[in-house]
Image (cartoon, rainbow, N blue to C red):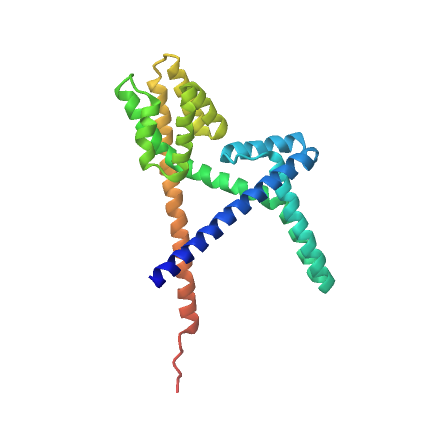
Length: 259
């Protein structure tokens, strides 16, 4: 009984710490939003605001552009403090650490852009598979709903593709055309734009199965090229990995002594 009491007490403490941590993070988030909207509003240009808003919409972050700018100021300020501290100890270290001031300004935006780049790459590699399913369904019957095809595909989709298709499915509450326009705006990639244009034309009552077939061939070629590039990349990595041990063995082989 004593052991169980201690176990429950320990679990209660862990739950309390977790709850307080979540509440603390929420308070910090609300405070940062309040500061951003109150003081950062005039410290961001219209072009940067649009750029940040595109990032926010793409990742569905649920924040304001001012909050990204505030993150830039926080990281830069931290880098300035670190630079001053290091410079007080050693001027050379201070100059070297000063690089982090620039990196601190760039980091918040670049990290978000890297996430988008990764997601776009994963989606571009998986999109041919999704489109093949769409194509075969539509080539068999005219009475096909895109929402049904999406629902069938999502369980087997990768995380990034599933997320985008899930958003698209939610947008279909407002109509299939609206969902296609939103997908095209959110993920402005060449093949996805063409897909959305073809599906929008189909919604108007045109039988454009020949256009769908053309896009399928294009995507099949893209998938083959992507697989070949990946194969070459792996071959290159393997050859580099094999080169090091071979070189090392060559250098450390003992030589016979001639008497």
